[in-house]
Image 1 (cartoon, rainbow, N blue to C red):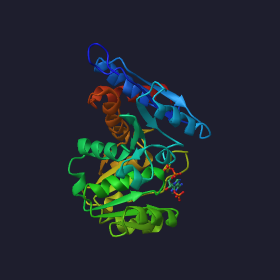
Image 2: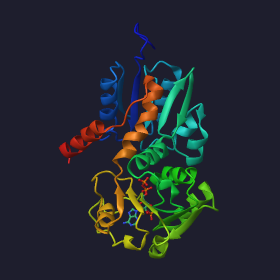
Image 3: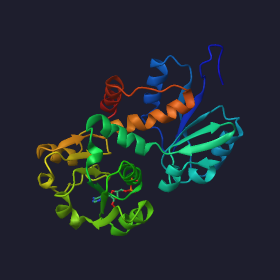
Image 4: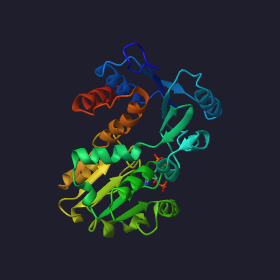
Length: 287
Ligand code: ATR
């Protein structure tokens, strides 16, 4: 849809259940405003029971939406409902962005792009790590493992409390480069890794976080967390106190939103400090 000024007047959504805590509307509203576009981006509370109907209406072209984000609990199921899921999202088994393209509903996953872009911005050269450690083997770790692998990091140790889950990810993303471990392997692995990524919810529920000895990592090692509430997670705080470079996870959220915006609204948005400050202020207002 275009108006007389030949700009997009499209409408996009974030569909999830629950979805009211999503910060995506704030991000997209900021970009729509700063770029002077008249589209919209709104939340849609969609239960698993009605998700197939929601997608069917979207595909019919009668929903009023050009596309949107899908979030928990639909990221995995959406793959089976779209006309075309790209290789990235198929390998990951999860998509977060859908859009109508000449009547076909397409899907991709931008979480890995967001993860890599955040590190590119805050710790350039991170992909020269050689060896990385990913702590956690849940849904959130998949995009991270894929992105780190695709940027050329040779060995990725996936360390998880439940070893079979780490093994599943090794099978999914390549046994030669993705190596599964139980938690007790961590102290030994740290001395050889230049990149450490926490993808677990450790410490988020107020339970005590174990002591990590990041000092055995090389001095130029980078420690990052994909959790961004709080910005300084317990694991990042430990790493910083031990003199390691830390990168918080907020940039991943901001950067993963950009490709979808471009597909729905036709313009490339900018991730800048103004946007970051806006989201930080919103976090402060709601905690
Ligand atoms: P998500 O999709 O957000 O990644 P998830 O699938 O529930 O959520 O995965 C959470 C991750 O945090 C898992 O790797 C989990 O370890 P298990 O696979 O053993 O459950 C990890 N995790 C959560 N709490 C933990 C804790 N107290 N100690 C160690 N790992 C923890």
